[in-house]
Image 1 (cartoon, helix red, strand yellow):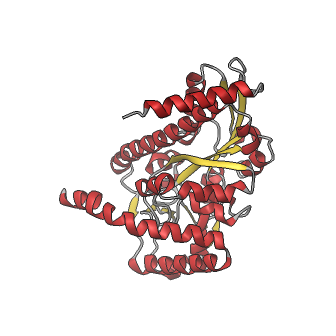
Image 2 (cartoon, rainbow, N blue to C red):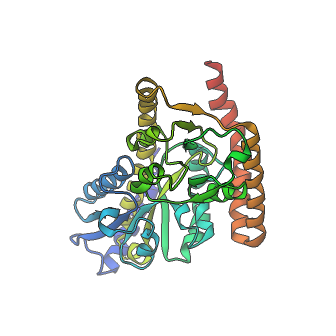
Image 3 (cartoon, rainbow, N blue to C red):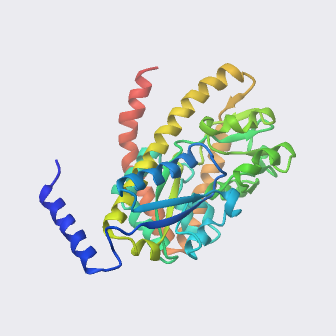
Length: 356
């Protein structure tokens, strides 16, 4: 039930602030430039930013307009963080784990190996302290970060050769970002990160031996199955969250009502991306089974999963020992997953198992 008294107070506060600050005008049009990591018209990810621009324009009655530049225009898919921080762009749409070279603590806010599923992670963000911890990390860079859309559980990747043991990972050149790349490096692989538009060529030319991208929602259109037929189930990104970034100085110049419109639009489009991704994954999985029967769906052997889980735990312990803020985030996620996973098991898992 809506608390009308609270709503009236909030509206009154917005009016007072707006009237007290001549920079805020009911007729003024505010324009934001957004840089995205993705190519032009990239499905699902690019749909989220387009939907954001449409929504804020409609909700603000044209007072807030967002212009989107894809990587085709700004030419720097992994430079979005710096461009938003420096004010070259007002906003960005990307993934937090791409910035571990800028700040290692940013990688905790996309997805962690053996971590939370999408519903669990959203609960942690909004009700378990995740947003406050993300603010601590990004405040020092003059950036506000918000959840920007989830892919759901990602597949473990496309491999040219079957993985039967930990030895098969040694020396393996694989495109895989984030903390998962560090885990694979610890067990002997050679991880790298490559922009979306270069993945197929890198795999075809054997610059890499394997890659992970997203899942059936986006993978089939990329054609990876033509040169890497082994498709492994996931372990590394159980709920991959993209992000909206906003330059804090630009945010502070927006009137309170437009800040709230933008905040709501980001949250809605993030959830919509999750729903769209889930839908397209189910459609493409069916298509894959009927049209591409040569794809060999595999799950990593227990020996391999156990080795990666051990490496993951050791790396988290090392990170926590070196950095108090990293420890705070790691402890928060571990405590939350311990609590929420009990409910996931007795609700979703129990139901799904009962239908077999």
